[in-house]
Image (cartoon, rainbow, N blue to C red; front, side, top):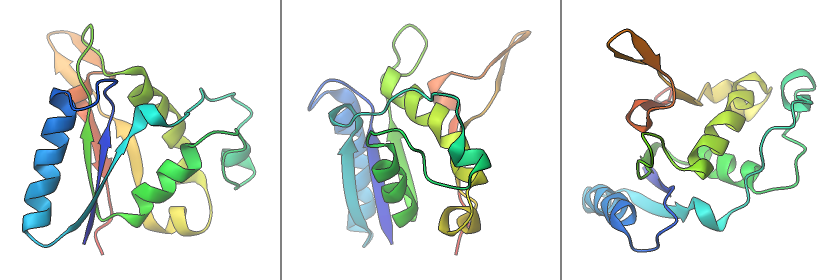
Length: 144
C-alpha cells in the first residue's frame, strides 16, 4: 500500500509538515510505503479555462507540475492532505490543485477508470454553505 502526503504549507518543518509526517509515520509503521510532497516546491498554475483536459480527453496542457502531482496521487492508495488555515481558508497551492483537479474525472484512460477525484465538499455553517473550508476537502477513491 502506498500513502502520499501532500503538504500545502509554505513553512518547511512547520506544524502542518510535522502533522503530515506524523500521519505518514503511522502508516509506515503499519507497513505502507510513504512519500511526502511539499506542494510549494512545485508550480501549479491557475486553470486557463480552455479545457482540452475536459473536452479533448487529454492531460492538462499547461506547462507546470500539476500532471506530475496527479500522477503521484493516482499511484497512491491513500492521501494525507495537510494545509494551514489562513483567514479561514487553505493555502493558495491547495486551492490551485483542487481547482485544477476537477478535470481529472473527465479524462479517458487510467484516471477515468480509477474514478478518483479531489474535490471540495460543502459544510453547513448556520445558513451558509462553505465550499472552501480546508476541513471539508475530501479525497474519494474507488478501493481496489
